[in-house]
Image 1 (cartoon, rainbow, N blue to C red):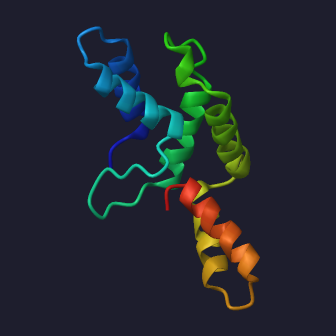
Image 2 (image 1 turned 135 degrees about the horizontal axis):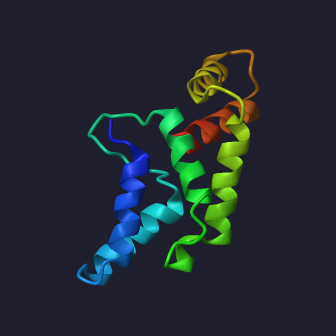
Length: 124
């Protein structure tokens, strides 16, 4: 599985490279703004929740990026929420608990939907 921190670094480098096309820069910008949500790096490959959280932490700790639009308020808030939800917890254990909730017949539909949304945010 690719390391999301290195992938983020590559996209950030692409944004400041004068030799890359505007289309390429726009694609990198969109991926960074999403915090990698929805990105798939292999046909059937699932993202490791610990790597997803590490990517969000790296994003939040890089406020001095040459392109300030990379850090939108919405993207910042999303990354903060992901990090806060897993702070002090094993992200893989969090994902396991959420998967158990989704498959538990005693859990309400509203709670299952919430668990599914959080799983999506963790790349599951």
